[in-house]
Image (cartoon, rainbow, N blue to C red; front, side, top):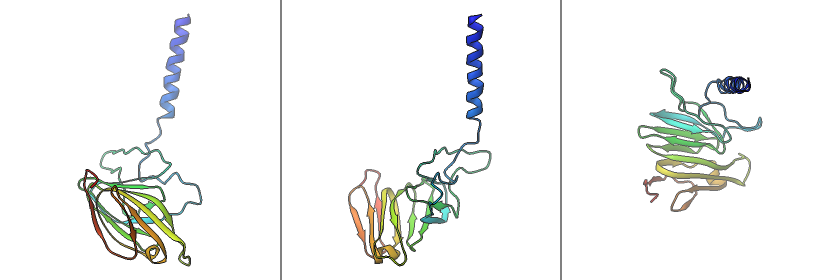
Amino acid sequence: MRASYVQSFIVGAMIVGAAIFADPAWSQNAPAAQDATAKPIGKIVTISGAVTVQHSGAVVVQATLGNQSGGAKLGDAIYLGDVVQTAADGRVGVTFTDGTAFNLSSNARMEMTQFVYDPNGKSNSTLLSLTKGTFTFVAGQIAKTGDMKIDTPVATMGIRGTTPHVEISDDGS
């Protein structure tokens, strides 16, 4: 009798576990697990190929069901702490609330580390971390009214209103 009790317990635990994990998978384009006051700092304005956005604080699982894509879409919001990545065929354009426009090409990765922007302020600041890939951008208002920095594996660039083109090799150089 004791063995059947243990078997019943195990089967019951498996059913409960299956019920807990039966919800649809979360994906990168699900709303960010941010507090209610979190505001987007930018949005995706161009996209092609495979691009993902990992929201900070969210469980991220990329799932593809049928012909649906688990990746980012045109118009998706970008939040502080998010990580944007492009695959070998991916390209993405992100416009930030200060007017900065970023383009990432294939195999690129960018993290939104810091973003403080007040249109009437003089203490604005941005720190974007780019660890691989090729990117170009046009600096917006933060570069003119505060401190805009781009962190790469080999250097941190201070930006004062330029339009650079930077390539970071797979080895970080």
